[in-house]
Image (cartoon, rainbow, N blue to C red; front, side):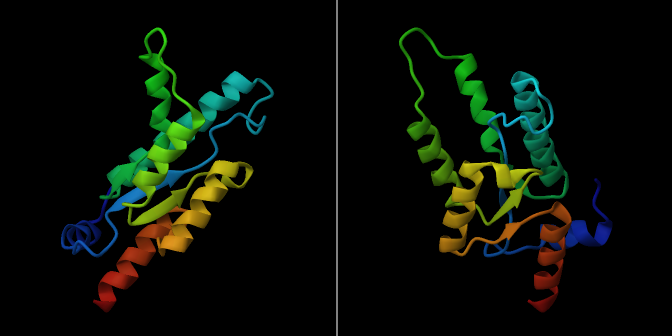
Length: 145
């Protein structure tokens, strides 16, 4: 997805009070959504979240993709442990400084995403089902300014 010259100019002119940082939320834990093999299902979930983050970047926003936390497990050393509470804490901290949340496919199957949506709404952070919805919102609100 590449930007039109007009959309790119609008995004470049956004003030700090407008949407720039986008939290990408979605299903990660395998639920047999895409495949009966849970390992494959997890990889597909990761791919969809990372791809959404890349699309957000190409659209001119700054994505935060919690799905990248899986990389932490790659580099753990003997005796080091990452708890679910640690992951939830750091994800929540990043969510709180984002300007919007973008949902990925099948997000309704994710208890974590449901909690993130609830938290975002309490903070007044808008939540979008698609990147097109997010871009339309930015374009519409930019025109009103």
